[in-house]
Figure 1 (cartoon, rainbow, N blue to C red):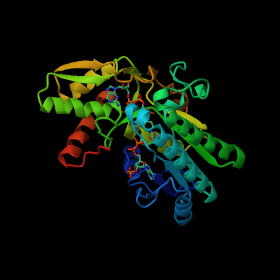
Figure 2 (cartoon, rainbow, N blue to C red):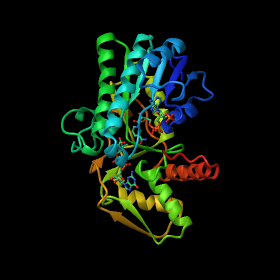
Figure 3 (cartoon, rainbow, N blue to C red):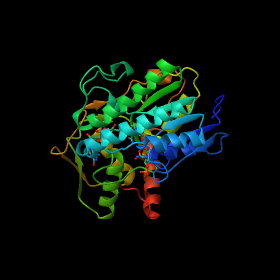
Figure 4 (tube, rainbow, N blue to C red):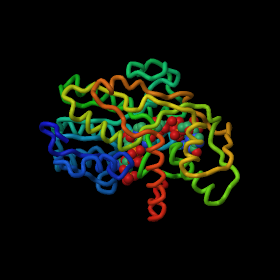
Length: 317
Ligand SMILES: NC(=O)C1=CN([C@@H]2O[C@H](COP(=O)(O)OP(=O)(O)OC[C@H]3O[C@@H](n4cnc5c(N)ncnc54)[C@H](OP(=O)(O)O)[C@@H]3O)[C@@H](O)[C@H]2O)C=CC1
Ligand SMILES: C[C@H]1O[C@H](OP(=O)(O)OP(=O)(O)OC[C@H]2O[C@@H](n3cnc4c(=O)[nH]c(N)nc43)[C@H](O)[C@@H]2O)[C@@H](O)[C@@H](O)C1=O
């Protein structure tokens, strides 16, 4: 990782989309990567988590474990999204401090910002207004994790800090038809419509919300970069600073997949936050910028979708 004193990093959630991108990013470097599957370590269990940290003694942690899902999953299961994400964050951050971890990078999400905050979203907008109701539970858990890291840094002088990624996509995503995020959902729906020669595909909501998307390997690179900064911001947005409407994105996915039918909208489904686009000046000031365009990232993701489907291991949870 080229960070003084970081020889061993624990990647929490290494089987997930972000965690596996982090493992790809660190493969071949001289950083020793520690991992544990959920069967080996339930991060909601504080005693087991403390024991894991005492046994493995990592120098650093990148915390990419969470209960994650798209707008419908978040809206349907707020109890699980709040309780599991708070439990995981609290047990891991507390255990890391107790075990003498030097650096902890917590992953939040741009849904922590108020629903109607000024765009592009600056970090200073945190806690300035009400949250978007469809993901309030998840956002509250992420704010709690961010704040606990900030408080440890302030009270105990340890380098615990956070990154707030925008909407992500890439290899290893969840392709569940109801519970996934928009890009994997649409890749799957357009692909199946192409295979079945369907005349139209319906997307959720009005198609007018605006979203920003970051390719997951860019995120992994940004996270490793943030771990190398001596005095990083307490939290920093990680995105591209570029957004488009969901309808525009749907047309782009259809083009990537090679689907030529009609695209319909379904206003009975939730739109969620009307606009979500990050101000990335704080990130750019650390000398990092994304590399992968949406067009290129979609092409790579569709290729990985085809190989994951072909190999019979498409993730759909
Ligand atoms: N995907 C996105 O668009 C965005 C994601 N993020 C954040 O990035 C991080 C990673 O997300 P992503 O990779 O997409 O999510 P995934 O669902 O792909 O991966 C989450 C990982 O967390 C693990 N996990 C969940 N619960 C537990 C538990 N109780 N104990 C141990 N491990 C657990 C899962 O394990 P298992 O494999 O066993 O299920 C999985 O490996 C999260 O913090 C998320 O909030 C932020 C913004 C956008
Ligand atoms: C990353 C972020 O992700 C979640 O928030 P979200 O940005 O609203 O995420 P989403 O990807 O599910 O939807 C984006 C937009 O796209 C529209 N949309 C169209 N058609 C489909 C569709 O088929 N599936 C989905 N999921 N959305 C669709 C959908 O109606 C919405 O307008 C948070 O809960 C939380 O997890 C979080 O932090």
